[in-house]
Length: 361
Image 1 (cartoon, rainbow, N blue to C red):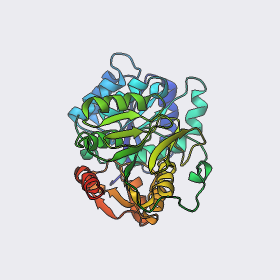
Image 2: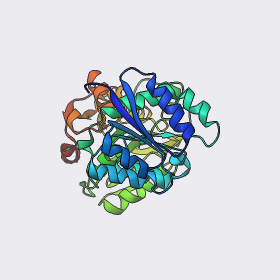
Image 3: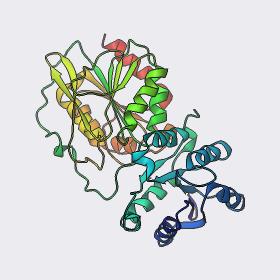
Image 4: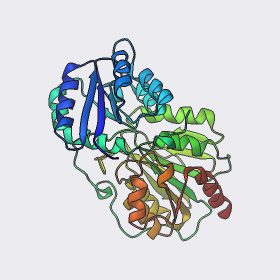
């Protein structure tokens, strides 16, 4: 992007506007062009100067942030970062924000706000820089951000690497999908096009707790396949997609020739829980060549190393292409590692999944 990244902050808290403005203004290449205490004031300021990125609260007077987000995405799609204390406690609000097109979410605490914002300034800056590059044209017109300031651990913290124990060939095959920013829309675009004969699917989408159950219920209501939040011990079976619950890791296990999921607690991996790397490593270890691995749109690199482990274990692997990604972070890192056998647009992924299903029946 040529020139400075222009940012507008819309929050009814003067403290939030001040602290975030100061943090961003210190950064080269970023310019805070306006602040507003609510969306109605923001609309007036937008007429004078439209920003490259908006930082928006949810709870505000006169118009809530989600209604404002929908208005923006209808009139002039612009990368929006939701910065709200509702991102964890208000799961429905979080879901609505992501479904409306928010690029990412920063969760504000209810106490110690000033210290949190100051300590998290580097993360906020990075979120702005990433949001400015978001490809909003890739959002279907109808997540979650990682917690900030946490150590970045690898999948070793949950599941040790080691000799794969996968059977060379079983009658059960499966598909493993990992995604983050933009993934709610990408998953809907994929899963709604699959017939009930599709292989069993295990999914990690970066989401906060409580959000995943609601997301799965919504998808289940519009898909031919069964979609649900995974429970410990659930079997991976044709016509079923299991979504890792927010705040827990999901791993594949083998019971004889069948596959089950294990839902466990543990530390953040790549600053995420659930982590794509944890799921993909377990699939590499217990399914090996009996799996298809797919990495979709998302910020960061979670899943890239895990997809490489799947690739090296004999699985077929796919990465979403840059043009159809909202954020080309996770797929790009996987491609750089040589983890992807194929790179394809989102629209081609459902047919690739069914082609893999037909080939393994």
